[in-house]
Length: 297
Image (cartoon, rainbow, N blue to C red; front, side):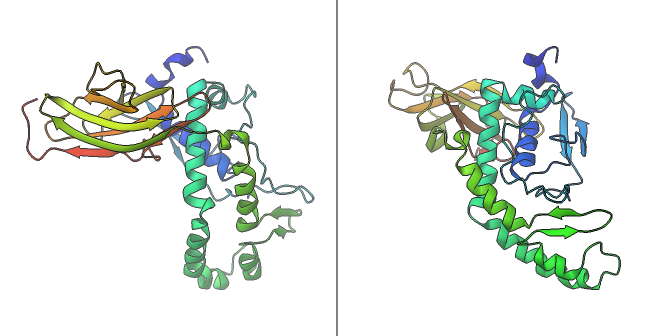
């Protein structure tokens, strides 16, 4: 609230934004994003707090609601944007870069898990794994018929009062269509291709990383020498004055420090409307360059 420009010194913002994206896409409302609960804050060795989610059994709009209230397939990605009870959501959705990072993570979650129907394959795998145990469970709050039905259709729990729980497929197929048509999801993101990393004979003081980047305004590379470090950020250039050689050819470069053995890195590009990471799951995934032999820098 008091020094939002210093938030990254006390909070892992990328991890926090991934949490908000996860909660929204999966309508996980029994969480910080609605009921302000079901998370831990764990402080790391760098003094930053990290969100750790737990108790996600009421995701997929499973929090329960009075009979007659429909499923929330159109739960707004911008929900709580101006609600003073949610300062983290306020900060993210009203910050020009954090907002684009949030939607980049939302698009990745939707694309990799729901737009391609991968979640249905996973659901079938786990339904088959547990169905015999569900059928034989004498203490289940739902019948086996409810278990079978609720994969695709709404089930209403009658006691202690009627509450409907939407089917996962029923919800997420409708939510996929809603989100894919949301203006923020349709914003044209930058393109990052042809990434290469090498020790240049012209400058062996670090690792040269090059990439072809289009539809962008700003480009950065994040790097660290080992997995326990915090990623550091520096710009990538296409001005002919750095390791990119030729100006304005769409090939951006950066020279990043490297440890004795390896360096981990990812690229981030943004324009006025949207942003893109490469790899898209950064900071949870990254590229790794390992030297064939240790060098003296």
